[in-house]
Length: 229
Image (tube, rainbow, N blue to C red; front, side, top):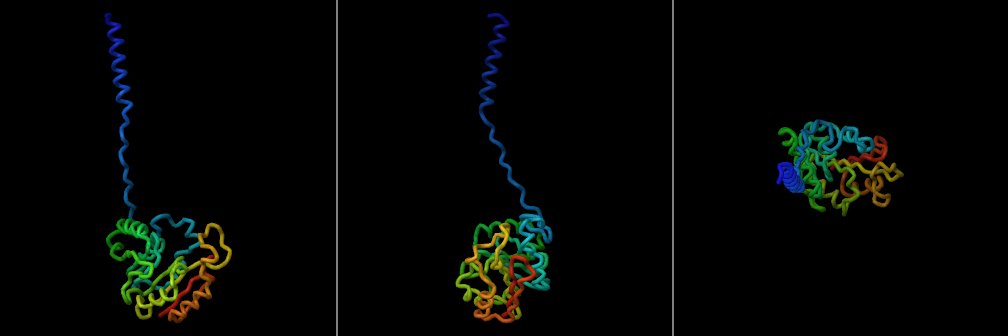
């Protein structure tokens, strides 16, 4: 065999071998996203202050309506993934985030782990039962219920039981949707699932609350109600 033919044969052999190795895919490395960075004050852990919910929920107007919070323990009942809990945290002595959805509780725990040690020490996260918020007697100064009260059942009994978890002089603070036509970007439930304001007032009274104060002017799409024990 001539030298030229030998070189040609060797080239063909190397080409076949190279193709064989190229055909074997190399698995891509698994990229694990870094944990959330420390959540700054007044910034939602999911979205920044320009998020769409901010525009209609007005969370800081709600928080201002709660009054001074520096020495208060505030329960966020129906906390979800912490929209209000994390905004409350820098302002309160303690925040207790409560929800019945275990998946949301796990997300809350994930965000908590990203906080600095001081803030972590002020946040308690609890998985509740449908009929039990997992709160101790007289534990809270304020129980905040946002977009959740219409789902409590039996409502009067549940609200009555919450009184036992409030300290002397404590208050319940409820925010929920007005029973009027709302823009599509406001994720309100259907009309028959909303709790109209006068019915909530009646139910709070039946549950034994006093000094029931309503505000349906501050927020465009929602009302706020405070009630004392």
